[in-house]
Image (tube, rainbow, N blue to C red; front, side, top):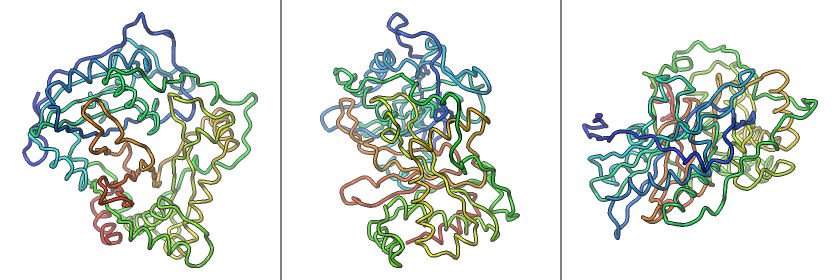
Length: 439
């Protein structure tokens, strides 16, 4: 089937096929449980670019597909489907359903793809087949948890596009999945086998809530501006903003100039800068509260630590809430301090309390009037080799939710230390936001 791409470019797809693990090789055929941290019902879409001077793209689809079948012997939950087991708790079953795989061709060169990654990755969504997952085209129990597309480019390179369920993978887990897939494609054994043991994140008996959990707080809407309330899909604008190392250095200096803070990370200062600019762009009234949520890796924070190769989400959400007038008027260091304090609050004890809070009250994260900031800068995406050398680049092509920002490094040695931020906002707000953050 053919679909119009961007600028009249055409992506031509072959017929999608279902890839399943050999059933005799699956050790456990029951239901694969999910922890509270896994209850993130969205799919993450990303692309990897590959090109080799020694090897063409003719066999790319066959290599990826054959390796996927072997990968699912170990990662068999990725061949399953989500199911509701009790009290809206989710699990995975039906491992014979399979992952979805499709081959495609596009009238694009690698340079064309890289240019769109740097400006508006949403134009590249047709490089990631999602099998009707988005737009509520399919009911949840019918949605594949892993969908892959290999698109051959006219330059001899190709794009590997992946749509994967957040219920089974965060950024670190997804990287382990792809790296294991790549090892199989190169004829190697998997170096880090997945751990399917979820016992370390079970609720305590009896459950005990020991902390205040602002991540569950529902923010009241006090703003009436169209910029603040118009988050309808047809009015959303996507853009990547690039911040060079010199600007980041200036932000860090600003955060520490009054002596309140002794240090400040790139992520903390940029997140604060964007949070402030975003609230202004959305034209929030002074007493409008705004929530900031930041996923934090807790693999080593838990007691005991999560096992190596843990299949699932090893992230908890740091959260802080501030009024718009405070974001606009408080010293920059004060707001950076709020972000730092929220991240520091994520400990083994606070995560256990959050899990127990969900168990007792059924609380879920509230994303209303929230900016969700996550960083991919420390995840080694581009060390993935399927036989064509390391990936030239890796990038998201769509945000799982419009309230989300993704930080990822600009690729290339000339951009070392620079940071790119993928932002989605209503059109009116994006124009103001752009003026506020342009450097």
